[in-house]
Length: 347
Image (cartoon, rainbow, N blue to C red; front, side):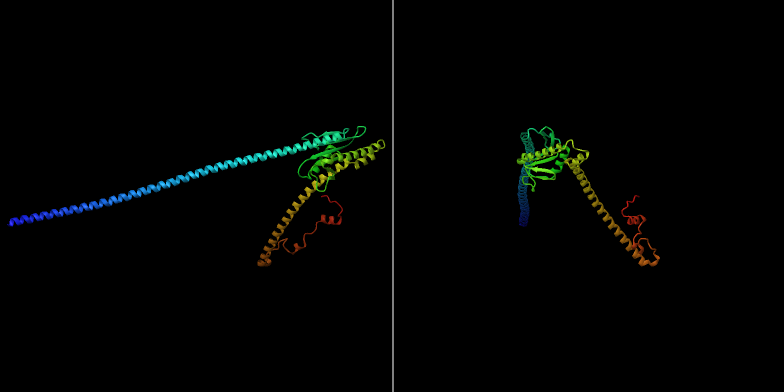
């Protein structure tokens, strides 16, 4: 009986051990299952995070690619627009250059046509006179009109200059006077479509006749008749002339006046240059004198300060004492000039 109870207790103990072992295994299995579930959940979360990261990166790449494509397209468009703008600018410059050349050529052609018309009109109105066109590229006006008398002698010369511009320039007159002297012409005429404000149809300015194209022949008739009358008066005195009369006629004639005018104009130019140089030199002298006065004032002030400190022990400096107030004594040469102001002193 005791043996049976011992066996039964042993069985119960073994079963309890087995149950504990099974419970331990079950708990271990549950723990492992829980860990597996956690790992599975972590893997799923990592997978979702990875997919989200990949999706974000893909989206960023798509945006970046789109931005680069848009920038590239904008750059290409900007370059194409810049090329078109440059092409348009170059074409505008070419058009402007062609227009300028065309206008210049047109103005030059119009001027040549006006010269030819004036030359033809002078030949038609004065068939006995000598009408000589000035070759292109040479100075001396446009047409030289030599007036011939009844016996075929030259009674005088008229120099014609044609201008066909939008504005009148006063610089034409000195040049035309120079051309008149070079051609040894008694009269010079400027034919211009645009006249100075003080001239309505024709007039004389600075010894140059100015007129419009419509009255050029009428003015030529008057000037030509004047030259013929002067030549007739001059020819009437042939044989009675003396050297004094010839000299007087030369002095009162246009050639002497033109030469004097040329000399006076040259002296006026030199006088203007001398006046400008004198103004510049006087300005420099005044500037240097002011600097010297400032330097002497500063030196005198510094010397006075030192003299107030040192007293009589500081030696006097020539030029900074009271004797300097009286100014330098005049030299003998200056006294001579004051005594005899009309004499020229030669050093």
